[in-house]
Length: 111
Length: 118
Image (cartoon, rainbow over all chains, first blue to last red; front, top):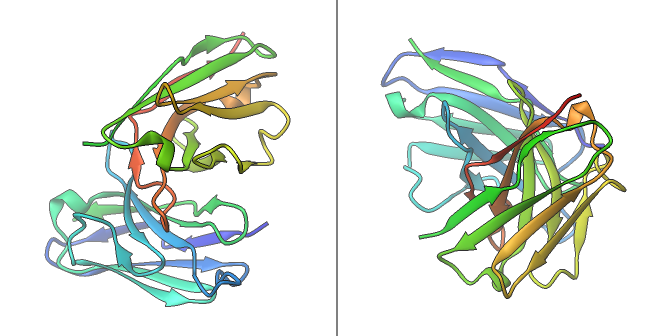
């Protein structure tokens, strides 16, 4: 089974600074069709999760361009530039190349 | 506006069954794959099951395979999850979510809570 390891487990960021979250996979996430099924989700406190990024770097409708996904193979990163108060919550990476699995989450707090 | 409303959760004894529903609106339900994802209290997200738009393709997590059945009624715009032989570890908030062509969980409902306890 594919394991997604997210680091750090928690992150405290000053408003306006950049945050970076890593997601490492135990296997390459490039599918045989060349597509990489790696996504990022944010679950704000008390809310359902929401899709931020799909296909490594494609922002979902309405997601600010402050959210930038990157990476390939087994190493992926979500960067949030100019962190705002509404960005707090738990971020999950997710893969659908080999079965479907979520990372264990990274909690973003505002200093 | 896409809306997904889950229902059917509740308190159930171990070994018993429960059927969850997810009523969809705001889009052509029959065009999209659908999913169930759950979240145990204070824990992370766990994918449970997926079904394609015409029910041709169905997938389950190993933790529920053989006990849970995902299905859909496109005429009623409704997704289902039949859960049998429930265990305490199935206690969770169950979400339904709609697919995109290249994204798995684009729209989510608010969830329905299932508690398995004697």
